[in-house]
Length: 122
Image (cartoon, rainbow, N blue to C red):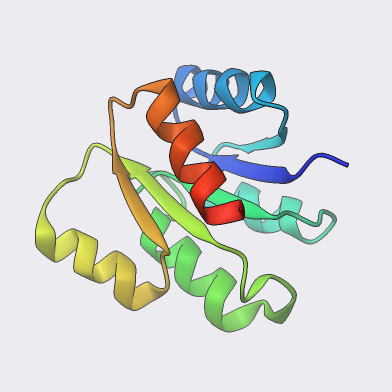
């Protein structure tokens, strides 16, 4: 059974690129357009990993990570990778403090994304 990954990004093209990359590597992908949409989808889905953007409307990536880590016990230990244009060390620290497992800077190379996913999911 393939592992399921939730891809959260307000950019439809980024979501499609992540989805295509992961689907071709044998993963199942659920897409969400922002943190609030992702939380709704997590209520009805079991995921093995979450990949989220930092900057999004309605609920940014940091608030989303905090919500998953501290408010939703069913997904508390799911690995969360930030996939964002943000490369500032203080932002990365905010991500770690919120509970993010890792950080990938956009634009990403598909092979790098697959490598990180395989490393995290085993």
